Length: 152
Image (cartoon, rainbow, N blue to C red; front, side):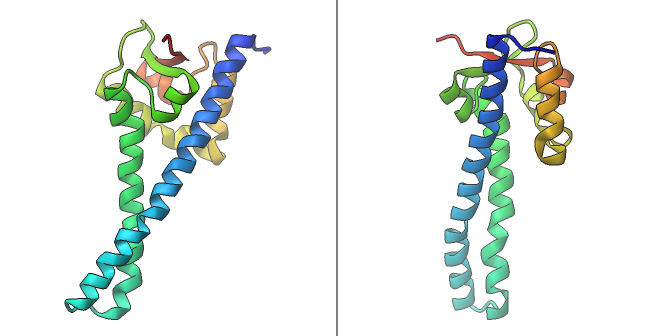
C-alpha cells in the first residue's frame, strides 16, 4: 500500500516523536540518579546500612521513569491541546475521530495499549501506523483517536 506525501509526513513525524520522547525519558531517568545518590548519602548518614546505598540510589530510576511516561503520554497532552512535547515540536497532535479533544480516559487507554504497540521494539505499532487507513496504532484504534497535523 503506497502512502501519499501527507501520510508519509505524519508517519515519519510519529516515528520521530516516539524516538525523541524515548531519548527525553532516558535522560530524565539517568538524571534521577543524582537525587537518588544524595538521598542515599543522607540515609547512610542517619543510620541506613551502607550495603543498601546502591539499591536506594538506583531505585529512583523506575519511579521517575514511570512518572515521566505518565506525564508525557497522558497528562501533558491532556493539558496542552492533544500534543506531547515532541508532537508540539513536530507539528502533530492527537484528536478524536470526530476532531474533538480526547478525554483523560482516551489518553490512558492509548498509554495502556502501548504495551502491545511497543512489542518487538515498537514494530507492532510502526506497522499498524503504516498500514491502517488513518495511520493509527492499536491504542489509537481502541481509544477512538487519530494523530493529525497541528493547525497553528
